[in-house]
Image (cartoon, rainbow, N blue to C red; front, side):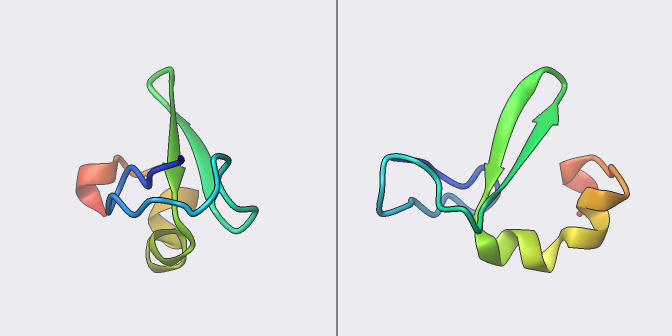
Length: 53
């Protein structure tokens, strides 16, 4: 089961839904649910560190 690395929401399927986003941060793959992606899209595109969201 995939878990959002920002809010902790779990997906209903073993693989993250297509609406979730993936990010490579300091060599680690991070997954973000649709809601967190929508709320933080500008910060993600601007490559801001997650604590600055």
